[in-house]
Image (cartoon, rainbow, N blue to C red; front, side, top):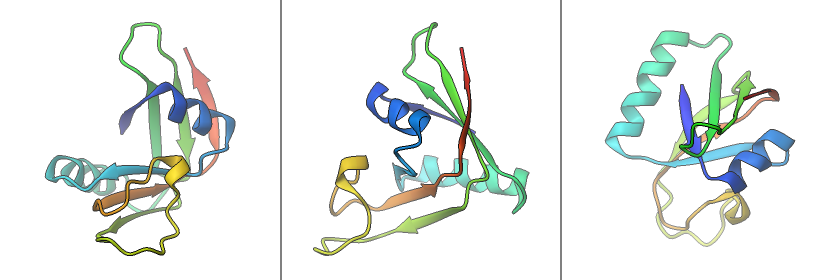
Length: 106
């Protein structure tokens, strides 16, 4: 699966600082995740993150995705999801717990 990121989030994942990726739980994203999980099963799952939409953008590959979970949190005050990593309070999310960011490809 390839996911497009803003430069800020891409750089944090590439450096290993950001260990989770948050996506809104839309029907499109749920379908992408279901297809990706079906294709790769519970074995070694890989996500390629791309920095932006330009022709010169780079990619980073995260191997060994630890888990994918759905959070329909509502407006709870306490949450382990991190706003500094892009969490928006009250939004239903799909959370990818990332493995190591192995490869930066140009």
